[in-house]
Length: 223
Image 1 (cartoon, rainbow, N blue to C red):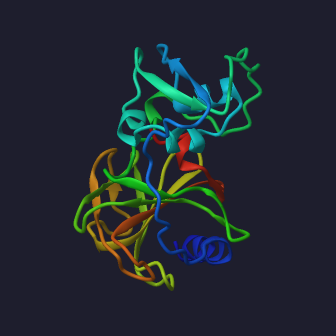
Image 2 (image 1 turned 90 degrees about the horizontal axis):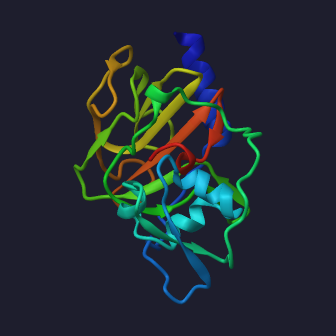
């Protein structure tokens, strides 16, 4: 366990860095050029982004986040910056695969205020979700808690959960951690409360998803 924690500290200290909350929200931009897309059964935000060769983040930015989060067949969403539908891509997906029963849920109800993207020349390796103090933070999938403390400078109270297929989820700036190291958790279980511990200028969850230690864009998995 000690070696595992040292490894996690190494990858996080080397790759995580302190970020303040950016101040923009995810509301539809009616002035942007683009087209409307009718969602079909089985489509996800990521498959739609692949179809039009745009980023999932840009689709989220130009649509109501809550509509995107609960995307279902029959919904219409705005696809920015394109003029016509493109042919589906051949499947040579380099993203790690999830089993059907392992789909991740979104960890907290709130507004995304910072994305998985370059920021001031450095990579912000997760997303920040603004929510009221004390809002429940939920485990995105079944797993085992491998870290629950506040020893990472600047990140306040952190919970790290190990999932199947080499995935780890990271939840930071928590007001309070509600789980302990070694504890088994289930998808949707409340594991912490939103706070602003560490270096945070607003109440929010800093959330990361990693596969084999590599940061992944949560918006490609958590819907």
